[in-house]
Length: 237
Image (cartoon, rainbow, N blue to C red; front, side):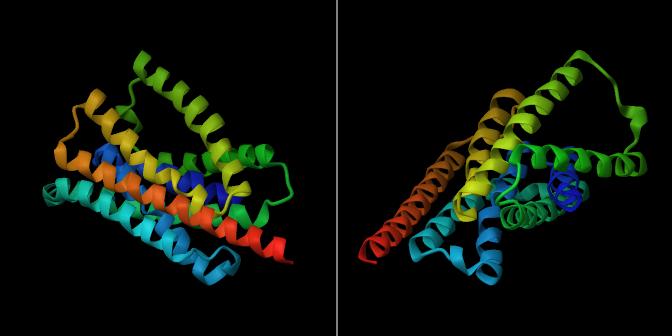
């Protein structure tokens, strides 16, 4: 639990939160949406029982094309060194989340899911504290009502609810399917970034959304085909 908490909370959530000081929230979510691709690549070597079919692979590639289209709108920001470092940190966080998710899937099949998720979050927070004191400049922290509201929201919805639900999903669904949530994140993050933070949203990004959702639909169809084939084999047996 301590190791998975370090991978999924400390490294993944921690690095993304740190990087978003320099990187738009929408772009951070877009990079994190590479996670299904990483899951497929890792599963190809460690979990032969969940190998994707051709439809799933095509769907993931189409979804990734949509993500790249969105990302192409922000290439000029790489002239900022802090932006480049932030992008690198988010890539590291995405790899860490993918590895942690697969570990959860492998070692927590017959255990208390909600208890394990809570223990992971506790360890993740414990690992974050020394890193915060080491790297953060706490003199810039100003406690305002907006800060407290954000903290409460993230604690309840982002951790106690969202993380536990994701933990449950990866324990019950094939990793390829459970990881597709990260294709939804950019759609939500970019729209909310536009509404709340005045981040970029234009026709090209809208078209990229459609491409991304098409990829998700194809992946789900591919998974349904796998389930159908398994059921036919059981019936024949």
